[in-house]
Length: 520
Image 1 (cartoon, one colour):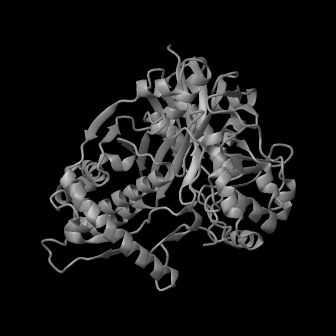
Image 2 (spheres, rainbow, N blue to C red; image 1 turned 90 degrees about the vertical axis):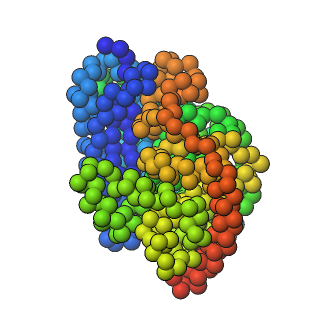
Image 3 (cartoon, rainbow, N blue to C red; image 1 turned 135 degrees about the horizontal axis):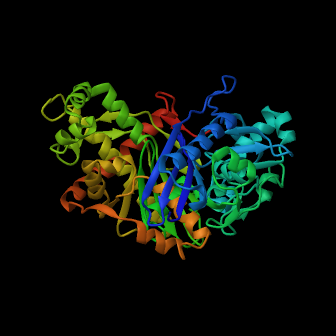
């Protein structure tokens, strides 16, 4: 049988093993859902169950081998990817002793303590690492030191989840730049750990493993890893990367000045650059790309997909019932009606996610404003479309934010993820941005990116960039309606002014934040 490549992806809501041909064709996928429970003692916590979750992961690997009938000897290499920010702590014997998932928010007290210790430290860390306290590992490790000192004393190593998967397969500890950088204990330019950042707040030095550049062979499947997963002992295991970065590889966004938007529960705007510079005002995240020599400005829109699901379930019962009868998605039925609403929704504005401000990251209470009591104009399809327009305007704001930091703009964007299935949302996005929007055919972009890394690591591909561009296919290109773009630009200015006032109302505690980073 021809050689194949395997990706193992530890996502926020599930773990999966995906098998690809060398031509990028998906041959099989086995997925298991998982959840991350809150420890009732610590509000905002998000524990990671490494025993149960490894059981699920290894069963996915065994399952996709059985599903496809592939000979394990024909799997040329394996690579791993995962949700970013989650960390695993180990004792000196290599046993897992503590782990938390990506948006764990238990460290409010520690962020406050860090700010009191040194009000300028967060900005100093950001300028070197591209990260603030909002998502990084620094406050979480500080939390373990304060709240679980017995665990902290035993801690000998700390890795990310994709590194944890490699450790379970090979017995070797490692890290790679694209996910390790999200800890904030990292030198962006050097693409390596900076222990002095941890030492500056009294944390242990020397607990992070060797960095392997993305696409490097870390080790080989061990006898124990082979027994548990069904993989062949000695199969090369290659350093992959974070989910967003490998998602970019999987949609061909691999060179400087390219950009991608991933639309799911959260929306990510990723802009590639060949310079490891940060934003002077600390507003936007900067990460290492999984392509060596490339970095990414990243801006996140909070909860668009979750808002859309809420709206569907709360107000679109008729479409949900009709979808059962006709076999069509309820969103498709809503889209058919919403496309007839004019651009700008008659001036109505929707607020939920704000344009990113990484150093003081918070979001106002959600609202719809500017509607009238005219059911012909302001009905559930208008409100539905307003959610789409709001998300697109947040993305436009992110593009402008990155332009202010870099002086550059993409000439077009790639749009992937669940939201890209909506032709209406794709067109609204193109109209708001004023740019062409390309939608790729691949549905497992992150896993494909990991498979490309695996193939590159063992010499089956000569170049990550060339291979990604050769394997990616686009199924649609949306061109902007510039008349609609002008409408949206007027609306955008009003929306920014409105959001500033909504945020002030939340700051005054008249309304609740939709979300706020620890310590804000």
